[in-house]
Length: 223
Image (spheres, rainbow, N blue to C red):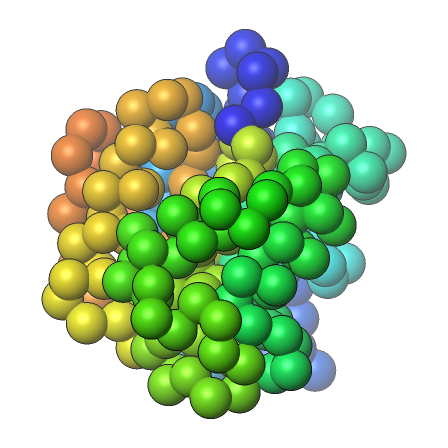
């Protein structure tokens, strides 16, 4: 995780439309070190869209996203280094093995790891036997665990995770929960979407509820 003191994410009156439908309506919140936000909502309600907005991958119709009190658009490269975004797709290259995949993505992030470290991260998610198989030969749950293993080397302060528990068995879910708790205990920030209830030790989450109804986009009283 980055060493900056008490990094904070601030969102001010964020709006986003899909066609004529307003998915995000005047959303505002502040997230500080050691705290997290749980985004909930049905399919199509805008959970992935909101996370992509927060990651700087989509432009908002209006509003501001601030990192350490500065608009992310004016410090895009700094902000990208401060966050780790994991989308609902795993972003794996089929021809690479999990070890090669982790080494490649870690190098892209400027935090290179050796094969021994990659094996260690994969073993944490029960992938020792699959570590040297092509990713195309893995099950969906195994691919998801490879993607989540990236969390073991990132130094990013802010984690944005889109349905990270999808396709995981109970053991992998517990391992991920422990990793999220450790990130928060070290002063990290976390925003995740999930259909299921999530119980992490420490501070309770702020809740954002999105709705697929055109007349009920978001319930902001929880943020």
